[in-house]
Length: 52
Image (tube, rainbow, N blue to C red):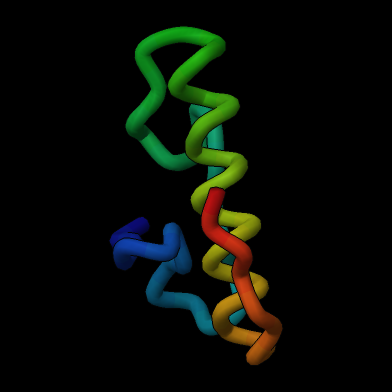
């Protein structure tokens, strides 16, 4: 599936992370894609994202 920068697929409201995103090279990258997908979901729902 094609994904955008928020890891949303071309199927609206379907986000991918970890091995499903096709980006993981280990557990640390898989976990990071989970964070990116979560931020994408928050952004799409209009909630604020606090940056550290």
